[in-house]
Length: 179
Image (cartoon, rainbow, N blue to C red; front, side):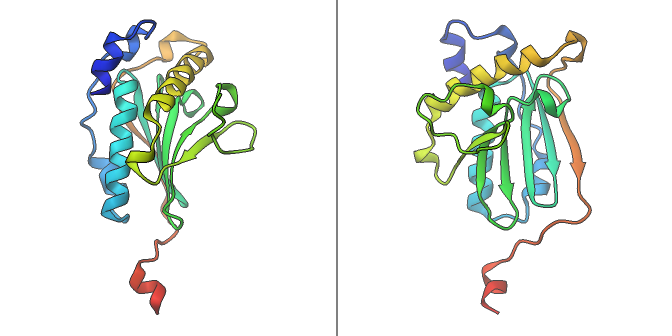
């Protein structure tokens, strides 16, 4: 759906215009501890990001505190365009920008006061500002490409599991909380 809209827009880099997004086995395995509503929201956000950045690579991190994954024109985290993270205990879903401090945010909706990462908290598909975030993703994509010093680093269409932590913060279920 977003892919077709992108084709019609002017000034969209050709590198953005094709790729498959059907590699979900590893990601779904890492998301298995979360409730179905969170998985549904995360996979919806994933489709949104893939449709905007179809010729990039998905980098997956199954870490102690969160499951996080993002899109990069290379296999390097430092080139990440945008990402999705799900906190293991908070269950918060973030849609973020690795270099968020370097992109415009005229509506000032991005959160984060650190040196670089900015994000929005996503709680509901209907409240997600798709058009606004799409513009930020396109800007972040151009910014990411400017950081790639060697064009030979650019690869396309990979889903890469970058890290899997042996130990993970446990997710407390409703039943565990009542005890």
